[in-house]
Length: 128
Image (cartoon, rainbow, N blue to C red):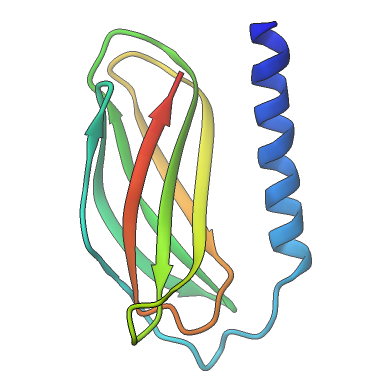
């Protein structure tokens, strides 16, 4: 049952990425960077060194997740809320990885598809 759950999450993540790629539109008039509001440590997982920037028509939020535990996490995900100039939430950016080893560091790259992103907020880092 655990294996089915893990496979289901991986498939769901892949579908989300494919949907995002399929809906890409021109972002050339958007912001060059966005600002981060917070950082977090949860279950021994710490998000550090977060920044953002445009690559072509896509905004990416990059950074690192450090696994401070000795446990290997089969799946780890970071989630960011995206906000416009008025502070209204306009979307979400996520990235995930499999098999983050104890003491390991993962360099993530979460893709933001929405126009007009002016700031982002780390909503969480989850692992199992």
